[in-house]
Image (cartoon, rainbow, N blue to C red):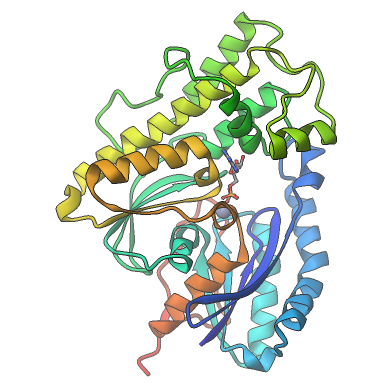
Length: 367
Ligand code: KG4
Ligand code: ZN
């Protein structure tokens, strides 16, 4: 069964084809540079860009694969959560294709797709603890099957990625700044006493990163001159990302701030994920840990999740960094998994913006 996946929930337009559970090919276009000019995603511009690109990206993917629309069996699309205008572009395009070609339409939960993407690299083992750490969400799930997700913990305010991006902004690093903090944070040892492990001194599985953000801001105010005086040139950013070269005018304490903040986030995720495993019955009940979302590309987060899985004796599914950030393969793969179980949607498929619960409203085809 060949499934096309369409992703347009935020600022990446991405399409991919999965055939019998394996990735055939994928195309992706990020709008990061456009939104960086505004310091964050501008929804109206995002949807216009998706609309401008989606048709030509579909054509180039099909051409590269040597396929026609008639060779596709299932069309899957991210239906939410995300920016409504952006989602509508992908869902509208998917419905148009399905209507014209008669393929099965499968609406995919973008968050579930992030976690299931790990299955493209290694067969997923359920029940699993899902740790989703992206720019918009920090969620802990019990996952029993590709369709069956139970939310057990979530952020009460900022998502982990949002905290990275806001701290990066305080330091005058470009948006989205998570990866710059990651790289800079490797140029110093973290000082664990510098920032709190926020909202861990309680009895629940939820997160709150806003206090950590405030702690960084307070520290920066007390230590004037730690942030960059002006944004770095593109060449300096690239040298930093690719060769770990510290830009010449960079304040000496910036790597320390990045390392210590990054360690605080990684420790917090470790503490809550570990607590979730215990609550869910530990190794006897849960067989693996799946970590996904843009922040799962973070090296300190990856190390702390590796430690957790090793200590608990569980399989760890940690997708390669390209599968962690938004991509079309995760939608195509999830669509393929669901369609393989006989699940699909009609053309009435609804698009769900952020904040609305995504219903389990599949049509089940017994044949
Ligand atoms: O999952 P994603 O691509 O988009 C959403 O669905 O939100 O996640 C984007 C987030 C951004 O906040 C970005 O700064 C963060 O992931 N991110 C990182 C790293 N790479 C991306 N954060 C920390 N370290 C990284 N290496
Ligand atoms: Zn995402």
